[in-house]
Amino acid sequence: MARTTISLNDSLFEKLNNLAEQENRSTPNLIETILMRHLEEDLYVDEFEMEEIRSDKNLQKNIKKALSEYKTGKGRFV
Image (spheres, rainbow, N blue to C red):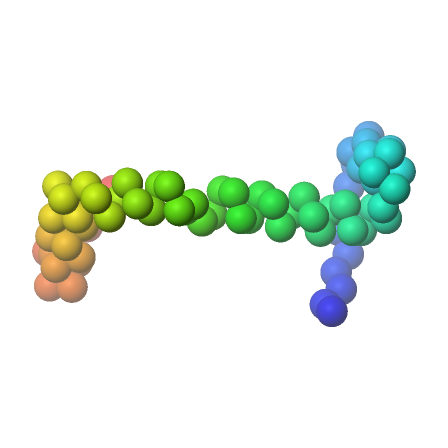
């Protein structure tokens, strides 16, 4: 397991310690759990959203067009 050191202001550290104590877990475990949840919820599309994307033919067409333009150097990121 990798290790790292972070600096937290006293107020945030106290909140994390109190929450960890309430949940009967260590503060590092609580921090790891919070980070994992954030990454899973905010960075990945859930099954419902993915099905919406797959079923939207207009969106699919636009994605393919944008990818094609990007590959030929015609597209640009805005």
